[in-house]
Image 1: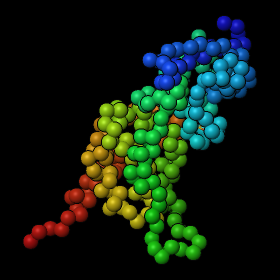
Image 2: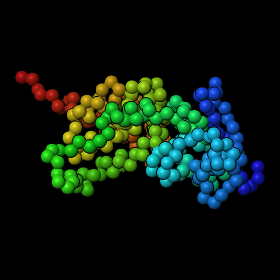
Image 3: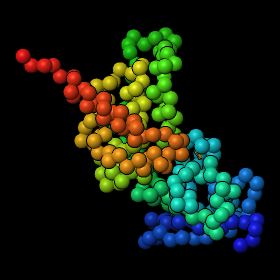
Image 4: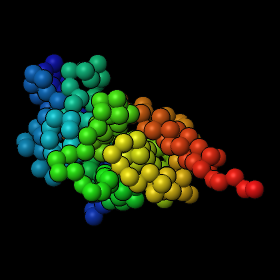
Length: 244
Ligand code: FES
C-alpha cells in the first residue's frame, strides 16, 4: 500500500439484491485532517456511487454517522484517519444487531419507537410562565450530562438485553427518561416512573456497562438506569400508606 493512501474494508449489503453481507476494499488517498466520514465520501464520489451511509451535521452533533470502525463503535465524522494508521486496513461495518437498510445505514425505526414510549419531552407546571421556567444552577446539575445525548443509537446497539428483547426500552430511551425525571421543571414524575418500572423498563438492565463503553459523548446510561431503579424502589417502599 502506498504511504499516502489507506484501505477501507467496508461491509456491503443490499437486502434487495444480496443474500448475505460481504466485504469490499477501497483505496483512498490520504488528506490532512481526514476523518472516516471524509474517506467514505471519497469512495462515494470517486469510486462507487452506490455506497450507503448516514450523515448530516459532520460535526459530532446529529449522531447519524455511528458505525463500527476498526472494531469499535464510533462516529465516522469525529474519527480521524490519522488515529487508525497503525492498521493495514480500516474495517467499517454497520451498528451491530440492527436491521441494515443498506451497507452502513441501519434502520432506526425501533430505536425511535422505544424513545417515544418514554415521552421524551418536558411537561411543565401550569399555568405556563410568560417567559421561561426558572431553574437554579444546582438543579440543573443532574441533567447536565444526560441532556447531551445525540441519539446516535450506539448504546442501544451495544446492549445485549436490547438485542434479545424488542420490548425493552434500552439505554438511550432510559437515559432520556432520566433526563426528564431528574428535571425540576417536569411534572410527570409518577407517569415516568410507571413507564420505567414496567415489564420493559429498568429491571431488564443487567448492568453490563456496554452502553457506557460505546457512548461517543462519554455519557453514562447505566448510572441513569440505576438511579431510576432507586427512585422506583423508593416509591414502592415509602410511597404506600401504612395500614392501621
Ligand atoms: Fe452528525 Fe456524524 S454526521 S454526528
